[in-house]
Image 1: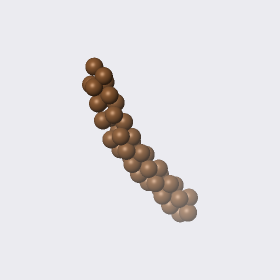
Image 2 (image 1 turned 135 degrees about the horizontal axis):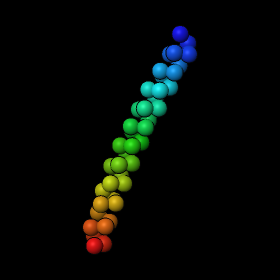
Image 3 (image 1 turned 180 degrees about the horizontal axis):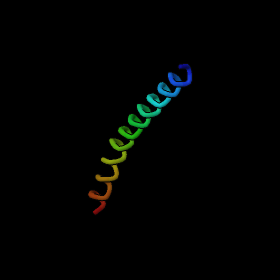
Length: 41
């Protein structure tokens, strides 16, 4: 039971962190990358 709970907790934490990081990266990188080429072009 202990390993199962630990595994699930770690997996959930990693997934949530990945989602948050991906969301912030996409939100922050997308506009900058999209606006930069448009303004430069």
